[in-house]
Length: 414
Picture 1: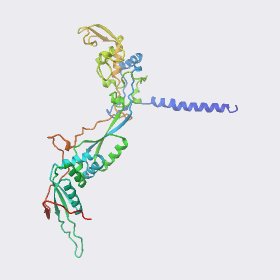
Picture 2 (picture 1 turned 90 degrees about the vertical axis):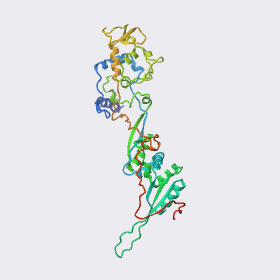
Picture 3 (picture 1 turned 180 degrees about the vertical axis):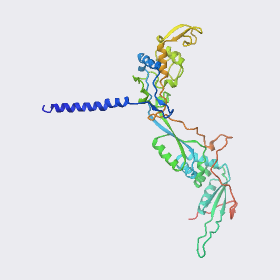
């Protein structure tokens, strides 16, 4: 027992540090929270509830509404949609990324669309390339012509021996034949830029994880394209329309008693003020939930919510000018009306003040990009097609030796 005081002091210090770390410091941090500017509206959020709504919070609490309704929207996960909004300065690089990695179907549709604007001339091919792709295009069913552009001799200094410049070849597609898709695939291999001729903006992918989004987005931006990202918040509460984002501590800043709730016999009410604006709806629902039919509140004949008739005064229907006539609720098919008591008006004011919609830094709300147009090749008949990639029309070269038709080109030189 000689070390008893030391052991007691050690235990006291350990418990004190634990209390400071797990109780005092979090309480101090939460107590120091201040309203912040919403990233969505630019206004300070939250704002104090008006006096009537504060009184309604006490009515809400006194009637035990928090036993059956929660005030906390949960979020389970998030994913992303990626849209292409600008092609950028390098259509060939973008077309290669689209056709080989991101959206081969979209690039193919753009190439098929380009084949609707024949003839197409592909310039600057060397002999082996021209022969190889001539074979491939003809195997796909295309009708082509080949033109040889004889290079002009370069000026050489006296006594200098230089190799003669190589001739180049142009492949001219005059008809895509019956199998346009196969011709389009070959065309993408020769000139990937034809795969970038899509109608913008266009959604490239939906439901991407953060890792997949970063990987695809990096390839597109490296190719010079401009993209737009939309974040989707996923969760049962959001799918039901109970909120646009998850609830955070800032939402309860001005609530002296936070009534998050313990179970959900009814819908979540953290954003009921945005979902239902009507004062008459709320009052009618409080008087008798079974006369209100709404998927949003799960009400109707099977509603489990109790009625609160003691918050109203029932009387025969009044005439204009009678005190309380404007505030009275008249039920269809009934010869009486109900006048809400101050407690009912305060409770409705509190429910209408429950709005947790603005996006915050720690809980952003997704913004939808501009509506995406379908690829031009899939546009409805009569629609104006978008501009295709630049297609150079056949032009006479300085010295051109045309071959009207290529019956059977020679195999590629080895």
